[in-house]
Image (cartoon, rainbow, N blue to C red; front, side, top):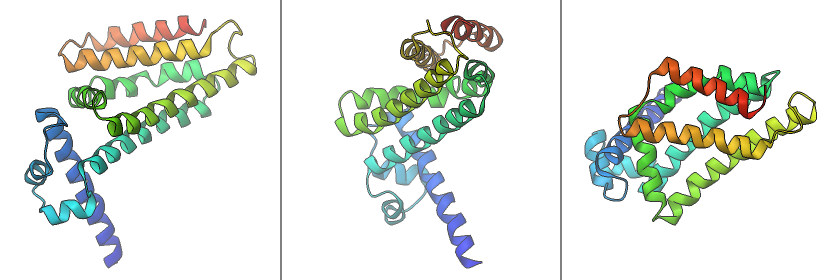
Length: 198
């Protein structure tokens, strides 16, 4: 029983630290945020913080791991779908819940900015993005090979455009320019159908 309580506390503390780090990164930028600021915001002692995350880079890697987990949820959903194009369209509401979240959008902008000058941050998030793109391509190529997708579709190019659209929505959300949710969902649905010619 004690171990279960300790594990629950461990998860809670890590979540608390990551939430505080995200808040600091959004407010002050990753580059200028110190571990001391994260301690203060999370209301956790430096000793406790360094026990869970020995460096700011470790925190950034934990945020990247969370993004990877979210990506994998979509990947698994599409793998289970009879038609990945329809699956991607069905996933739009949940995907937009994330993309239209202002805190998420602002954090992604901060990460992108930091990645442009910090090779370690760039490496961590590039690995997450590259794997996501690679797995998406594999799913849609498999559908193409099984004659569920026209041979004329350039799958890598179509996936590139879909991800560029998602990145653009994130950028617009960070700048307080998010469009009507219902109209956006409808337009994305049509774009995805057009890209994959369905």
